[in-house]
Structures are given as C-alpha cells and as structure tokens.
Length: 268
Image 1 (cartoon, rainbow, N blue to C red):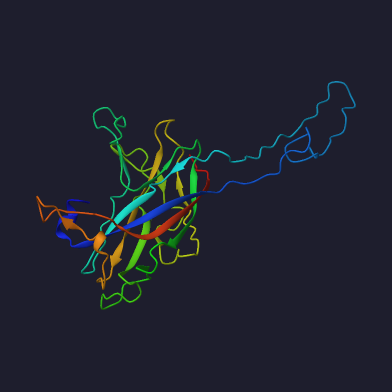
Image 2 (image 1 turned 90 degrees about the vertical axis):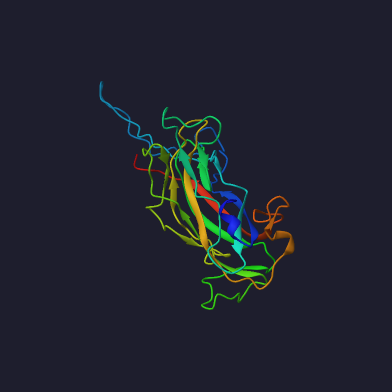
C-alpha cells in the first residue's frame, strides 16, 4: 500500500476488528447415565428366545468447545482528501512455492487481509456487526453524496463493503483460497451492519495442518467523500529524505468490525 499511497494526500484510518465465537451451551451432567440427564432412550423388550438379537441405536450430538480462528486486530485504510476510492490492505492470499508446492516456512506464504481457520472442522461467519469508534469524525453511509461532499461525518463519509476476495480455490496451486462465499451473501455493506448484525454465511475449510490454517481472503473496499476537515496527526506526510513518499503517522480511530464465528460443515 505504501507504493500506491505516494500519489495521495490522505488521511489514515484505523479499523479495529474483534472476534466473537458462537458455541452452544449445555447443562452440566447431573448423573452418570448421560450428559443430558437421566433419560437414555426407550428400553427395548428382552430377548425371549435363544440366539435372537436385539440392538441399541447409538446417536451422536456434537458440542463445540475448540473453535480456533484468527483475524487481524487492526488494519489501516487511507482516505484521499479529494474524495475517491479508499486504499486498503490487499486481499488475503495463500501462495505456495512453485518449485516445492509447499507453503514457505518463513511466513511469507500467507499475506493480506483474511480470516484464518486453525480448527479441525470448517467454520462459518455467522454474523458481522459494526460499531463506530470515531466519535462522529468519520461516518459510515449508504452511499457518497452525488456532489461528493461530506454530509454526515465531521471529517468525511465512508461507503464501504466487506467481501470474500475470491471463489473457493483449494487446489489452485500456487495460489489458494479455502473460503467459500457461494453459500451466502457475497458482500456486506458496513452501513447496514452498524448495530444490526448481518449474516453472510461465509464458510472457511478446516485447517490444512496443525501449523497451516485454511484461509478466506477478504476485501475491504469503497469510497470516501471529499474531506471537510482533517486530523493533523493522521495526515500522510513525506519524509525529510523524500517529501513525495508519505508515511502514516497516527491514524484516526474509525470503526470496529465484529465477527461471530460458529462451526460449519462442507460437502467434502
């Protein structure tokens, strides 16, 4: 993002992310007959003749206690003061070594904004909700005004969406994305998610191994209005060595994206 930002005179915004894990709760067992109480099923009749058979139907219910999912705690986007498309982190991607077909061990193989699933089963993004952290400085809006001017925020307005970056591509070495967006809504409009949980239904495959997660790449994109005010501390300024090479100083607080995660299943 640094290279692209050289052409900008912009403001850096920080979007903090939190993760909520949804797991069912059950009462503690109250006796040794079973985990859900004294009832163990319908008792069958006794065998009445020698060599007759009888059977017990065994059923299984699962309880989820070990969801292990990671998202970045903080990301920074850049808003151009003139009002245009925001600059955001690249979408998450997993890239294997073309020669070995393996993921590099130095950590360079997984990049960008993504959800990582280290669980031994698939997970679903069952809810996305947004809270405003900016104290009114920045406003998430449904759309930027036709005249491109700020109408709501003290600094500027933001019309943003969050979208899985690609269709599921598990065997597409050297680049892989194990998240599946086909089963739910592709895009979540952050304005709609303000205090109102959206249910995208995105699914991310189980971990590849104990050390390699499955990932879903995410793309945060959209526009900002022409700014009517700025926070001097967050303006991108050039360094003394290269005035045209801006570096973010102190990005403004903007908003928080809260994910609700639950167990899921896939056909494979």
